[in-house]
Image 1 (spheres, rainbow over the protein chains, first blue to last red):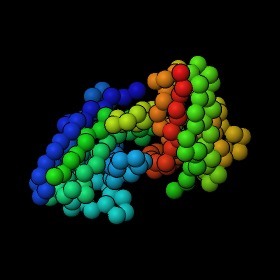
Image 2: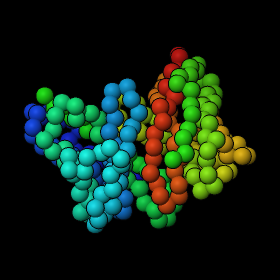
Image 3: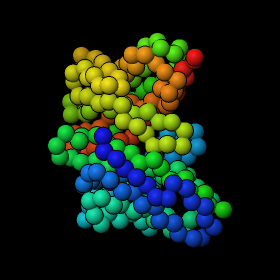
Image 4: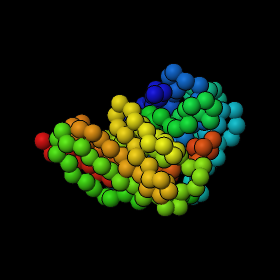
Amino acid sequence: GAVVSQHPSWVICKSGTSVKIECRSLDFQATTMFWYRQFPKQSLMLMATSNEGSKATYEQGVEKDKFLINHASLTLSTLTVTSAHPEDSSFYICSESSASGSLDTQYFGPGTRLTVL
Amino acid sequence: DAKTTQPNSMESNEEEPVHLPCNHSTISGTDYIHWYRQLPSQGPEYVIHGLTSNVNNRMASLAIAEDRKSSTLILHRATLRDAAVYYCILSVYNFNKFYFGSGTKLNVKP
């Protein structure tokens, strides 16, 4: 399957600062990437859909001004958590997908652990 | 969005087959059935997916009921490395959003 990387794998920041998380498709040109959030002992929650060259589509209840998503190329999508607060501490995971060909499923990155102090 | 229902947890003995069930009674004709598994502090790992016919790959088999309202993931010989949370997810072809349910936590005993 496709290979997805995330950077950083973990980050600790102070409350009020912004944090950028990168999601890279290493061997595939991903027209669509997804961002998820997972709190401890809970399932993954879809935050937004990121399409290359266009604005991201956010799920209901997700603040688009707080979670900025940029998908400027077919291999890179970034999630910026702006003015982070302790309640934003979570495990953030991206995935890639393509609507063309046989790749009608998603491949996930290893995740980024964010801790806001 | 079509929902899936899975048991919260299951237990298996090492080297025995495991059948993980998933109910999806509201599935529509264009919904694919995907299975992923997740280890602690890792991203979900793709296991298998299918539409109507049963599917096999090197990791597992997917048995889909004739009415498609349920499916079963089959691990033919469980190993300790198979201990994980297994998620059954539905998605519409070409509109590939995933809404995760709570999954089944599989414990494999040596």
